Amino acid sequence: MAQAKTYMNTLYIEAKLKRDDFELNTKINLPGEGVTVILGPSGSGKTTLLRCLAGLEHPQQGIIKKDQSVWLDTRTKTFVPPQKRNVGVVFQDYALFEHMNVQANVAFGLDRYQAQVKVTEWLTKLKIENLAHRYPHQLSGGQRQRVALARALISEPELLLLDEPFSALDTHLRQQLREQLFEVISHLKQPVLMVTHDLNEARYLADHIGVMNNGVVQRLDSTTNIFDDPCSLEVARVLGWRNFLTVTSIKSHRIISTWGSIALENEPSVDTDYIAIRPEHIRINIQQEGIEAELIRVIEMDGYRELQCRLQDGTAIYLQRPWNELIPLSGSRLQLEFPEQHIRFLEEGRINYIDQAVMKKCEKEKSEPVITHEIYK
Image 1 (cartoon, rainbow, N blue to C red):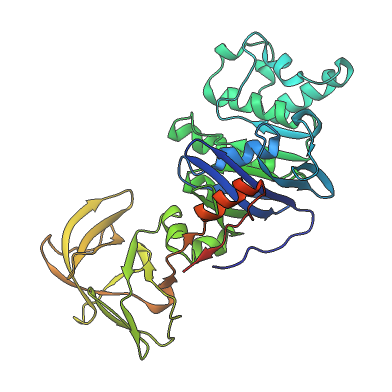
Image 2: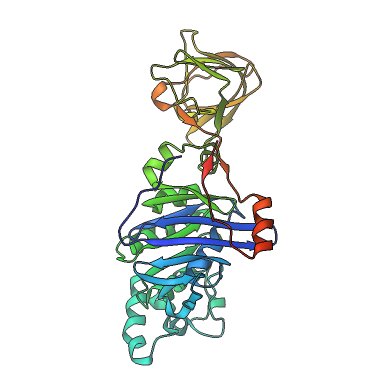
Protein backbone atom coordinates (compact mmCIF):
# COMPACT_ATOMS: atom_id res chain seq x y z
CA MET A 1 0.00 0.00 0.00
CA ALA A 2 1.29 3.47 -0.90
CA GLN A 3 2.00 5.66 2.10
CA ALA A 4 0.25 9.00 2.52
CA LYS A 5 2.45 12.05 2.27
CA THR A 6 3.35 14.06 5.36
CA TYR A 7 2.31 17.69 5.31
CA MET A 8 3.21 20.64 7.49
CA ASN A 9 0.35 22.32 9.35
CA THR A 10 -1.58 19.07 9.62
CA LEU A 11 -4.62 17.68 11.34
CA TYR A 12 -3.52 14.57 13.22
CA ILE A 13 -6.21 12.05 14.07
CA GLU A 14 -5.78 8.82 15.98
CA ALA A 15 -9.19 7.54 17.00
CA LYS A 16 -10.85 4.36 18.14
CA LEU A 17 -14.58 4.36 18.71
CA LYS A 18 -16.78 1.27 19.02
CA ARG A 19 -20.55 1.54 18.80
CA ASP A 20 -22.85 -1.45 18.38
CA ASP A 21 -21.50 -3.35 15.35
CA PHE A 22 -19.41 -0.45 14.00
CA GLU A 23 -15.81 0.35 14.85
CA LEU A 24 -13.82 3.44 13.87
CA ASN A 25 -10.16 2.55 14.10
CA THR A 26 -7.89 4.90 12.20
CA LYS A 27 -4.69 6.93 12.44
CA ILE A 28 -3.88 9.55 9.78
CA ASN A 29 -2.41 12.98 9.05
CA LEU A 30 -4.80 15.14 7.06
CA PRO A 31 -3.34 17.96 4.93
CA GLY A 32 -3.47 21.33 6.64
CA GLU A 33 -4.31 23.14 3.42
CA GLY A 34 -6.65 22.83 0.46
CA VAL A 35 -9.68 20.56 0.23
CA THR A 36 -9.46 16.98 1.49
CA VAL A 37 -12.35 14.67 0.67
CA ILE A 38 -12.98 11.46 2.60
CA LEU A 39 -14.64 9.14 0.12
CA GLY A 40 -16.37 5.90 1.03
CA PRO A 41 -19.61 3.93 0.96
CA SER A 42 -22.47 4.58 3.36
CA GLY A 43 -21.68 3.23 6.81
CA SER A 44 -17.91 3.33 6.33
CA GLY A 45 -17.37 5.85 9.16
CA LYS A 46 -16.94 9.10 7.21
CA THR A 47 -19.43 11.15 9.21
CA THR A 48 -18.24 9.65 12.50
CA LEU A 49 -14.70 10.77 11.70
CA LEU A 50 -15.95 14.26 10.88
CA ARG A 51 -17.95 14.42 14.12
CA CYS A 52 -14.86 13.39 16.10
CA LEU A 53 -12.99 16.35 14.61
CA ALA A 54 -15.87 18.69 15.42
CA GLY A 55 -16.00 17.43 19.01
CA LEU A 56 -19.50 15.99 18.60
CA GLU A 57 -18.26 12.40 19.06
CA HIS A 58 -15.87 11.37 21.82
CA PRO A 59 -13.55 8.49 20.83
CA GLN A 60 -12.92 5.94 23.58
CA GLN A 61 -9.24 6.11 22.70
CA GLY A 62 -7.22 8.57 20.65
CA ILE A 63 -5.53 11.90 19.97
CA ILE A 64 -6.72 14.79 17.78
CA LYS A 65 -4.41 17.74 17.11
CA LYS A 66 -4.66 20.80 14.86
CA ASP A 67 -1.13 22.17 14.46
CA GLN A 68 0.10 22.35 18.07
CA SER A 69 -3.38 22.58 19.62
CA VAL A 70 -4.53 19.34 21.27
CA TRP A 71 -8.29 18.95 20.96
CA LEU A 72 -8.44 15.41 22.34
CA ASP A 73 -6.06 13.13 24.20
CA THR A 74 -7.71 10.28 26.05
CA ARG A 75 -4.45 9.42 27.84
CA THR A 76 -4.39 12.80 29.63
CA LYS A 77 -8.21 13.16 29.65
CA THR A 78 -7.95 16.28 27.50
CA PHE A 79 -11.12 17.25 25.64
CA VAL A 80 -11.73 20.64 24.04
CA PRO A 81 -15.50 21.13 23.59
CA PRO A 82 -16.93 21.91 20.13
CA GLN A 83 -17.52 25.61 20.78
CA LYS A 84 -13.83 26.15 21.63
CA ARG A 85 -12.33 24.36 18.61
CA ASN A 86 -13.15 27.14 16.12
CA VAL A 87 -14.47 24.62 13.61
CA GLY A 88 -17.18 25.44 11.08
CA VAL A 89 -19.57 22.61 10.23
CA VAL A 90 -22.14 22.26 7.45
CA PHE A 91 -24.32 19.30 8.39
CA GLN A 92 -26.02 16.97 5.94
CA ASP A 93 -29.47 18.34 6.90
CA TYR A 94 -28.03 21.89 7.30
CA ALA A 95 -29.37 22.11 10.91
CA LEU A 96 -30.84 25.61 10.51
CA PHE A 97 -32.94 27.11 13.29
CA GLU A 98 -36.47 27.06 11.91
CA HIS A 99 -37.69 29.87 14.19
CA MET A 100 -34.94 32.27 12.99
CA ASN A 101 -34.72 34.06 9.67
CA VAL A 102 -31.66 33.75 7.41
CA GLN A 103 -29.96 36.80 8.88
CA ALA A 104 -30.35 35.51 12.44
CA ASN A 105 -29.22 32.00 11.48
CA VAL A 106 -26.01 33.30 9.92
CA ALA A 107 -25.36 35.68 12.85
CA PHE A 108 -25.87 32.99 15.49
CA GLY A 109 -22.96 32.99 17.94
CA LEU A 110 -21.63 36.44 16.98
CA ASP A 111 -21.98 39.54 19.11
CA ARG A 112 -24.39 42.17 17.80
CA TYR A 113 -21.72 44.60 16.56
CA GLN A 114 -19.78 41.94 14.64
CA ALA A 115 -22.94 40.59 13.08
CA GLN A 116 -24.12 43.80 11.42
CA VAL A 117 -21.19 44.01 8.99
CA LYS A 118 -20.17 40.37 8.64
CA VAL A 119 -23.63 38.96 7.94
CA THR A 120 -24.13 41.34 5.03
CA GLU A 121 -20.66 40.48 3.73
CA TRP A 122 -21.24 36.70 3.72
CA LEU A 123 -24.80 36.85 2.41
CA THR A 124 -23.45 38.91 -0.51
CA LYS A 125 -20.53 36.52 -1.11
CA LEU A 126 -22.93 33.60 -1.36
CA LYS A 127 -25.49 35.58 -3.39
CA ILE A 128 -28.32 35.20 -0.88
CA GLU A 129 -28.56 38.80 0.37
CA ASN A 130 -32.16 38.97 -0.93
CA LEU A 131 -33.10 36.10 1.42
CA ALA A 132 -32.04 37.81 4.65
CA HIS A 133 -35.57 38.03 6.12
CA ARG A 134 -36.88 34.67 4.98
CA TYR A 135 -37.22 31.64 7.23
CA PRO A 136 -35.78 28.18 6.47
CA HIS A 137 -39.16 26.70 5.47
CA GLN A 138 -39.36 29.38 2.76
CA LEU A 139 -36.04 28.34 1.18
CA SER A 140 -35.12 25.77 -1.47
CA GLY A 141 -32.56 23.06 -0.73
CA GLY A 142 -29.81 25.01 -2.48
CA GLN A 143 -30.65 28.19 -0.60
CA ARG A 144 -30.61 26.36 2.73
CA GLN A 145 -27.20 24.95 1.89
CA ARG A 146 -25.77 28.41 1.20
CA VAL A 147 -27.21 29.76 4.46
CA ALA A 148 -25.58 26.90 6.37
CA LEU A 149 -22.27 27.57 4.58
CA ALA A 150 -22.43 31.29 5.41
CA ARG A 151 -23.09 30.45 9.08
CA ALA A 152 -20.12 28.08 9.14
CA LEU A 153 -17.70 30.54 7.52
CA ILE A 154 -18.69 33.79 9.19
CA SER A 155 -16.65 33.08 12.33
CA GLU A 156 -13.50 32.48 10.19
CA PRO A 157 -12.96 28.93 11.48
CA GLU A 158 -9.58 27.19 11.53
CA LEU A 159 -11.20 24.18 9.87
CA LEU A 160 -14.31 23.81 7.70
CA LEU A 161 -16.15 20.46 7.79
CA LEU A 162 -18.71 19.54 5.14
CA ASP A 163 -20.93 16.48 5.70
CA GLU A 164 -22.37 15.23 2.38
CA PRO A 165 -23.27 18.83 1.42
CA PHE A 166 -25.11 17.90 -1.80
CA SER A 167 -26.96 14.76 -0.73
CA ALA A 168 -30.38 16.43 -0.46
CA LEU A 169 -30.20 18.13 -3.88
CA ASP A 170 -31.25 17.03 -7.36
CA THR A 171 -28.68 16.42 -10.09
CA HIS A 172 -28.99 19.79 -11.87
CA LEU A 173 -28.80 21.79 -8.65
CA ARG A 174 -25.86 19.70 -7.44
CA GLN A 175 -23.75 20.76 -10.40
CA GLN A 176 -24.66 24.42 -9.98
CA LEU A 177 -23.93 24.50 -6.25
CA ARG A 178 -20.77 22.42 -6.66
CA GLU A 179 -19.40 25.22 -8.83
CA GLN A 180 -20.46 27.89 -6.32
CA LEU A 181 -18.95 25.96 -3.41
CA PHE A 182 -15.68 25.54 -5.30
CA GLU A 183 -15.57 29.27 -5.98
CA VAL A 184 -15.96 30.01 -2.25
CA ILE A 185 -13.66 27.38 -0.73
CA SER A 186 -10.89 27.76 -3.30
CA HIS A 187 -10.14 31.18 -1.79
CA LEU A 188 -10.16 30.01 1.82
CA LYS A 189 -6.93 29.94 3.80
CA GLN A 190 -8.42 27.37 6.17
CA PRO A 191 -8.27 23.63 5.39
CA VAL A 192 -11.54 22.06 4.27
CA LEU A 193 -12.56 18.47 5.01
CA MET A 194 -15.57 17.07 3.20
CA VAL A 195 -17.08 13.60 3.42
CA THR A 196 -19.06 12.08 0.55
CA HIS A 197 -19.72 8.87 -1.36
CA ASP A 198 -20.05 10.72 -4.68
CA LEU A 199 -17.07 10.22 -7.00
CA ASN A 200 -17.88 13.24 -9.16
CA GLU A 201 -17.99 15.57 -6.15
CA ALA A 202 -14.68 14.22 -4.92
CA ARG A 203 -12.94 14.65 -8.28
CA TYR A 204 -14.36 18.13 -8.80
CA LEU A 205 -13.55 19.60 -5.39
CA ALA A 206 -10.67 17.68 -3.84
CA ASP A 207 -6.96 18.44 -3.75
CA HIS A 208 -6.45 15.27 -1.69
CA ILE A 209 -8.63 12.20 -1.24
CA GLY A 210 -8.78 9.67 1.56
CA VAL A 211 -10.60 6.40 0.88
CA MET A 212 -12.46 5.04 3.89
CA ASN A 213 -13.87 1.57 4.40
CA ASN A 214 -15.04 -0.26 7.52
CA GLY A 215 -13.93 2.54 9.85
CA VAL A 216 -10.42 2.86 8.40
CA VAL A 217 -8.87 5.43 6.05
CA GLN A 218 -7.07 2.97 3.78
CA ARG A 219 -5.33 5.39 1.45
CA LEU A 220 -4.66 9.14 1.41
CA ASP A 221 -3.01 10.89 -1.52
CA SER A 222 -3.48 13.61 -4.13
CA THR A 223 -6.65 13.32 -6.21
CA THR A 224 -4.66 12.57 -9.37
CA ASN A 225 -2.49 9.87 -7.79
CA ILE A 226 -5.27 8.04 -6.00
CA PHE A 227 -7.58 7.82 -9.03
CA ASP A 228 -4.72 6.83 -11.32
CA ASP A 229 -3.39 4.02 -9.12
CA PRO A 230 -5.61 2.70 -6.29
CA CYS A 231 -3.02 0.06 -5.21
CA SER A 232 -5.53 -2.22 -3.47
CA LEU A 233 -8.75 -3.94 -4.52
CA GLU A 234 -10.89 -2.35 -1.81
CA VAL A 235 -9.73 1.17 -2.65
CA ALA A 236 -10.24 0.57 -6.38
CA ARG A 237 -13.84 -0.51 -5.79
CA VAL A 238 -14.62 2.64 -3.80
CA LEU A 239 -13.07 4.72 -6.61
CA GLY A 240 -15.39 3.19 -9.19
CA TRP A 241 -13.03 0.77 -10.94
CA ARG A 242 -15.04 -2.14 -12.37
CA ASN A 243 -12.73 -4.43 -14.35
CA PHE A 244 -10.83 -6.76 -12.04
CA LEU A 245 -9.05 -9.88 -13.29
CA THR A 246 -7.62 -12.41 -10.87
CA VAL A 247 -3.95 -13.31 -11.14
CA THR A 248 -3.25 -17.03 -10.75
CA SER A 249 0.46 -16.94 -11.55
CA ILE A 250 3.21 -14.72 -12.96
CA LYS A 251 5.81 -16.40 -15.17
CA SER A 252 8.45 -14.75 -17.34
CA HIS A 253 6.66 -11.40 -17.60
CA ARG A 254 3.34 -13.10 -18.31
CA ILE A 255 0.24 -12.96 -16.14
CA ILE A 256 -1.72 -16.21 -16.31
CA SER A 257 -5.22 -17.00 -15.07
CA THR A 258 -8.44 -18.80 -15.99
CA TRP A 259 -9.55 -15.87 -18.19
CA GLY A 260 -6.40 -16.06 -20.36
CA SER A 261 -2.96 -14.49 -20.21
CA ILE A 262 -1.19 -11.19 -20.89
CA ALA A 263 2.48 -10.64 -21.75
CA LEU A 264 4.08 -7.57 -20.14
CA GLU A 265 7.37 -5.77 -20.65
CA ASN A 266 7.66 -5.07 -16.92
CA GLU A 267 7.08 -7.94 -14.52
CA PRO A 268 4.63 -7.05 -11.72
CA SER A 269 5.20 -7.64 -8.03
CA VAL A 270 4.71 -11.18 -6.76
CA ASP A 271 2.16 -9.68 -4.34
CA THR A 272 -0.21 -8.82 -7.20
CA ASP A 273 -3.61 -10.45 -6.68
CA TYR A 274 -5.56 -8.65 -9.42
CA ILE A 275 -5.02 -6.52 -12.46
CA ALA A 276 -7.45 -3.69 -13.19
CA ILE A 277 -8.16 -1.51 -16.20
CA ARG A 278 -10.72 1.20 -16.83
CA PRO A 279 -13.45 0.60 -19.49
CA GLU A 280 -12.28 3.56 -21.61
CA HIS A 281 -8.78 2.08 -21.94
CA ILE A 282 -9.70 -1.33 -23.39
CA ARG A 283 -9.38 -1.71 -27.16
CA ILE A 284 -10.99 -4.13 -29.62
CA ASN A 285 -8.13 -5.71 -31.56
CA ILE A 286 -9.06 -6.12 -35.21
CA GLN A 287 -5.93 -8.23 -35.80
CA GLN A 288 -7.62 -11.06 -33.88
CA GLU A 289 -4.92 -11.11 -31.22
CA GLY A 290 -5.81 -10.52 -27.60
CA ILE A 291 -8.02 -11.79 -24.81
CA GLU A 292 -11.03 -13.64 -26.11
CA ALA A 293 -14.43 -12.32 -25.00
CA GLU A 294 -18.10 -12.61 -25.92
CA LEU A 295 -20.16 -9.43 -26.35
CA ILE A 296 -23.24 -9.84 -24.16
CA ARG A 297 -24.92 -6.45 -24.30
CA VAL A 298 -24.49 -2.93 -25.70
CA ILE A 299 -25.78 -0.12 -23.48
CA GLU A 300 -26.38 3.39 -24.83
CA MET A 301 -24.91 5.87 -22.36
CA ASP A 302 -24.51 9.66 -22.37
CA GLY A 303 -22.08 10.30 -25.23
CA TYR A 304 -20.71 6.76 -25.52
CA ARG A 305 -21.66 3.10 -25.66
CA GLU A 306 -20.79 0.59 -22.98
CA LEU A 307 -20.05 -2.95 -24.11
CA GLN A 308 -20.67 -5.62 -21.50
CA CYS A 309 -18.56 -8.67 -22.30
CA ARG A 310 -17.76 -12.05 -20.77
CA LEU A 311 -14.33 -13.68 -20.78
CA GLN A 312 -13.80 -17.41 -21.25
CA ASP A 313 -14.06 -18.18 -17.51
CA GLY A 314 -17.24 -16.09 -17.10
CA THR A 315 -15.55 -12.95 -15.72
CA ALA A 316 -17.51 -9.81 -16.65
CA ILE A 317 -15.56 -7.08 -18.43
CA TYR A 318 -16.75 -3.63 -19.51
CA LEU A 319 -15.41 -1.35 -22.21
CA GLN A 320 -16.53 1.98 -23.65
CA ARG A 321 -16.58 3.03 -27.30
CA PRO A 322 -17.61 6.29 -29.03
CA TRP A 323 -21.34 6.45 -29.79
CA ASN A 324 -20.74 6.78 -33.54
CA GLU A 325 -18.33 3.84 -33.85
CA LEU A 326 -19.53 0.69 -35.61
CA ILE A 327 -20.15 -1.92 -32.89
CA PRO A 328 -20.38 -5.72 -33.36
CA LEU A 329 -23.69 -7.44 -32.65
CA SER A 330 -24.44 -9.02 -29.27
CA GLY A 331 -23.14 -12.60 -29.22
CA SER A 332 -20.08 -11.73 -31.31
CA ARG A 333 -16.65 -13.03 -30.31
CA LEU A 334 -14.11 -10.26 -29.72
CA GLN A 335 -10.39 -10.02 -29.09
CA LEU A 336 -9.68 -7.42 -26.42
CA GLU A 337 -6.41 -5.55 -25.95
CA PHE A 338 -5.30 -4.18 -22.57
CA PRO A 339 -2.58 -1.53 -23.19
CA GLU A 340 0.12 -2.12 -20.61
CA GLN A 341 0.39 1.56 -19.62
CA HIS A 342 -3.24 1.44 -18.45
CA ILE A 343 -3.05 -1.79 -16.43
CA ARG A 344 -2.89 -1.37 -12.65
CA PHE A 345 -1.66 -4.05 -10.25
CA LEU A 346 -3.69 -4.51 -7.08
CA GLU A 347 -3.21 -6.30 -3.80
CA GLU A 348 -6.16 -7.77 -1.99
CA GLY A 349 -5.72 -5.61 1.11
CA ARG A 350 -7.43 -6.67 4.30
CA ILE A 351 -7.96 -4.69 7.47
CA ASN A 352 -5.77 -5.95 10.28
CA TYR A 353 -8.18 -5.54 13.18
CA ILE A 354 -7.09 -6.22 16.75
CA ASP A 355 -7.27 -9.93 17.43
CA GLN A 356 -10.23 -10.91 19.66
CA ALA A 357 -7.95 -12.88 21.99
CA VAL A 358 -5.83 -9.75 22.48
CA MET A 359 -8.99 -7.73 23.21
CA LYS A 360 -10.11 -10.20 25.89
CA LYS A 361 -6.64 -10.18 27.46
CA CYS A 362 -6.65 -6.37 27.55
CA GLU A 363 -10.11 -6.29 29.13
CA LYS A 364 -8.98 -8.73 31.81
CA GLU A 365 -5.82 -6.73 32.54
CA LYS A 366 -7.62 -3.37 32.13
CA SER A 367 -5.04 -2.26 29.59
CA GLU A 368 -5.49 -0.73 26.13
CA PRO A 369 -4.73 -2.54 22.85
CA VAL A 370 -2.50 -0.95 20.22
CA ILE A 371 -4.42 0.89 17.49
CA THR A 372 -3.55 -0.34 14.00
CA HIS A 373 -4.98 0.15 10.54
CA GLU A 374 -2.26 -1.46 8.46
CA ILE A 375 -3.07 -3.25 5.25
CA TYR A 376 -1.53 -6.66 4.86
CA LYS A 377 -1.48 -9.61 2.54
